[in-house]
Length: 443
Image (cartoon, rainbow, N blue to C red; front, side, top):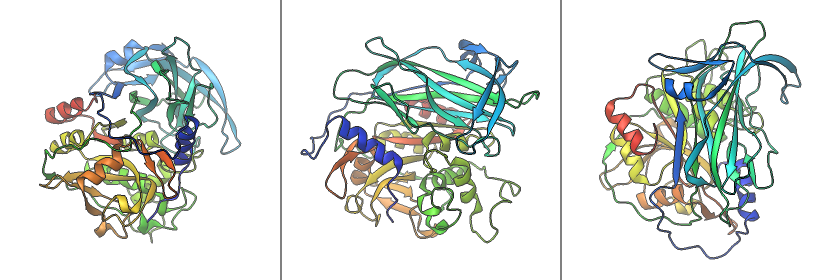
């Protein structure tokens, strides 16, 4: 199965063209610096107290969060996907300036929140370049758990000539020179219907900043873990033709299908009432549910990375982030303590033995490693649930996941995702899980 080319693929190809990458010979493997990724997430009570609040307040407890206190303003929001303009009370929280340990070529925000009906939130990013100049406030997402009040959406067309927002990713327009993003702030705006006491609750907000070098190949890692997690198996292809208004139906649902597998691994799932809208003739209605509630109305797809993480965190006591990992050793660190990961990769059919398809962009779930170190993945691009479990050769899989440049079917150079993954885990992990998450940069 070949997943249709996504907007993300088109946009990242455009970035590659903009910096002059053509059909030159593949570069040799690069010995990468130790750390190429910086994660900063605000989630503790001191974190929420550290920012600048205008109408918001922190809430203590076992899971600290941020809520609306007294609205600081009103917003008339014209929803571009419904044509409706509505008035909302609003309040904001702006993070302290975070100076990234990695001067960044890309930044991806993610958040965990509850937005009851009648509320929604927006996340924005403002950065300072290494030369001291600044970006505008970029919208990283307008989001609600449901779809009755607003249509969750990314925002196209944002650029200052030096950087741009491509769906869910801040990206430098050119990485050929030394200019990078040195620091950033995030601004969270909470909205509610006027005259109510409703409020979103936000438990986690942050971003992953990275500067992954151009590379067609990566150094091989050595096997370190032999373990397989028992993760539910769902095929996206059994949903082909179902609800085509959400990213053309199941054939493009690799991201929400993967998300649903991991959510259920952790013992969470939608209720019967949540699924009442799904045609009862459809098997695995929770996959349809995940597609609907990860759908980005601007991107016109279910593959918005932060929207998938946010969806996972709508389930009770779940945490979720979008990040990059450096190697399969990082994935082994997580699997060792029982944490699967959802990874993004693109490849030609002949580059991944046993897949049986090529793809311009695809998500699958890493659930373990064989004694020889090969990758055990729940691959939703399978003809049935029973066929979802796959074993892929370690060296092939590692390279297609971690590279940032590849040749497409036409022999042209295009982009790879450079180790992007979603990680979902309980809000109150075990000590071992907490240590493993910290080891891969997530706190």
